[in-house]
Image (cartoon, rainbow, N blue to C red; front, top):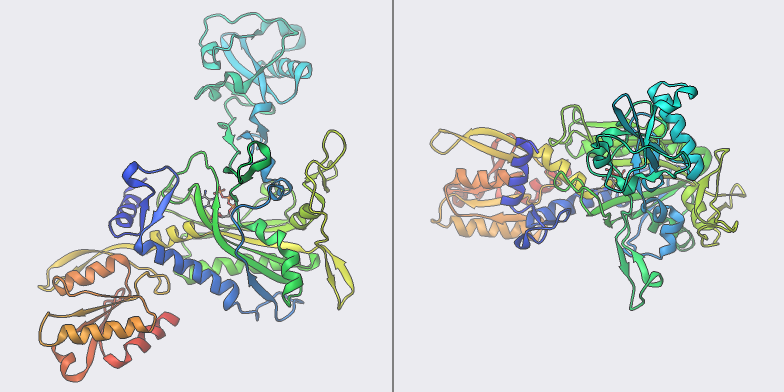
Length: 565
Ligand code: ATP
């Protein structure tokens, strides 16, 4: 991490925003605790999201042809759901394997499906891989070796293939002379012989250049747990790796119990768990994190319009809360990046300070998911067939690999008399990543004159007032002549109005301001001698440093007005 990020992390710890989990025991990689200020900040982020999506959602900018009003409702689902949910959603299979990507061809392989042989020609040795099995695999490796070394069939005997004891690929590659092969010998699993750093010598099954295969990534990202006293697979359950499935499996419940009509949205914010292989960059990639997700159900014909609506609206949410447009991008996925069921996906990405210049990290994905999810929970796990259609995946006996619920999750529009499976637009955001982005954006250093006029370095967190954990601070200028009493009364009045506020009478006034600047408190009120006489106080603005006298009786009103703006 760079200097700026180090300072932000240090501030988070110093002022009680974020601590390492279980720190006194040395911490736990990928887990974080939010301190007294962090918990307020993250709650404000989630509240702002909830208000924007549900409570205060406005409906006047709807896409052409859409109804002027639509419902947005919330849920709070259990963290552990029926294991079948994850089988039908695809997480059980998809999150289960080690995958390696080819940087050249963009193809992805199950790492345990890759096998190969090393081959040598004129002193150059390469491990040639294939994703085909047994004899077919061997023939493929042989063909690929000839291609790679630029040889014709009749020159095949110039290549020496290694059979290799299981001493590891690196060891084999280091051998002085390879062991000659017998053509019928089976290929070796890359997994069995793989060692760190040896991939530079591996030729991916469809690549032209060597060394394009990425390290295998464990896709077994779901945390397993056991329900009750049942041992074995029967009791196995998973901590949810996303909140979204709660909305899909409750689609019918919401439809049947609420007065909602398609289009409508169901949202939920809560914990998700992923056993990330490399948690890193502070809270950016954690193993336990919070998501803020919404599933918007709409008519298939209007789904693309709604997709654009949510994409733009979600981008604006971040900029309205202070992220600068220079650091925030809305990146549309290229066609080949889209999930097989999606006609459009865009990511909201932020230029985090821990990334190189020009690189962005994902804050939120807005995906058009078609009818994939509702259909999966009706019919069973879906896969794309050779014609590109989504069909139920079958097992070796021709039965659905994972059976769906069998429930009818279609929608009947009683006005148009049409029955259909709604399409879904999903804005899926991370509460921790958003909080981290707001923290990074807010961090500023400048210098301000102190009480004597000398310049003092100051760290100021320019958090949007709506997000700031503490909104106001009240200070008596000195601890005498009735000032503390006056200030305490004001402090209590602010607290009674439900506005987070602190009272501070310790140290010089400049120091007290700086203490508040560092945690992002937007408004400080100072009670001085004049206050006792005319019942006014000084309001000092964190960002403009403007100081203005206002009647003490207007303080609550003034803060409320500024928080609204
Ligand atoms: P990434 O590609 O970074 O792993 P993703 O595309 O898998 O993310 P989604 O499944 O779309 O993420 O989840 C939606 C949001 O949840 C992400 O945009 C991100 O804000 C948040 N999120 C996902 N994984 C993590 C994590 N490990 N730690 C913190 N937040 C996460």
